[in-house]
Image 1 (cartoon, rainbow, N blue to C red):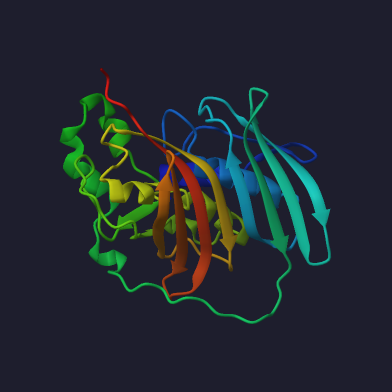
Image 2: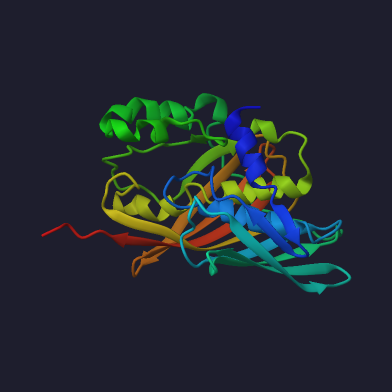
Amino acid sequence: MSDAHETLLNLLQVEPLEVDLFRGTGQGGETPTRIFGGQVIGQALAAAYQTVEERLCHSLHAYFIRPGDPETPVIYQVDRARDGGSFTTRRVVAIQKGRQILNMSASFQVDEEGWSHQHAMPQVEGPEELADRETLRATVADRIPEKYHAEFLRPRPIDIREVAPRDFFTPEPADDVNHLWFRMAAAKGISPALQHCLLAYASDMNLLGSSLRPHGQTWFTGQVMSASLDHAIWFHGPAQFSDWHLYTMESPWSGGGRGFNRGMIYNRDGTLIASVAQEGLIRPIKPKA
């Protein structure tokens, strides 16, 4: 297991402090200047799971309230809203320096039988034929200032392979529908709850970028201020994130400085594992006069 893999797994194992009170580190995520949103969701879900027995999460709904400071631990306060015969509900508040940075509601369900159907997985190139994120970034590293090279090129725990990657710096307008494969091989053998936490972490990757595609923008153009505003996940079944999963994303709307995005996550055999929705800030940066 690499250092990056071990760091992420440790991030998602929050420390109990008191009854229904947990602490997570702010460091080690995807971004250096603020805590990656998927990290806070994953830790909040991990805290909630520590108060639930023998039930898996089937949905969560979270609001990002303030940016998190990666140099400061995050305190997670869990409210045991309901323990019912079939469903368990938890409310989690993430706090830094006495202020909320995220609040989340999550629901857990006993395993039940019922009718089943799903939409088919899109037919796209498999991950073996695609370049990984590190390879793509290495090809353009000479286009960014040298002081940012280490952060830009550092190993990440999630292996991402985009089906149709765009130019980082001069992207053309593109269709909002996009696909990527992702996995973390080191996740093999971990608990079903931690598998869900990893999937929650990874579900925040690239999703907001879907709403930038029709406008010919990426995070690297310097023309957009972006931040996740809310995030919802519906887990349709257990995940095995050590195996490849296809993340199919789309953005049916943007306006008012916001973009709405949806995603569907399939395992390699085509089973729909999770659905995701997110709205984010995509505010144009006005050129200096």
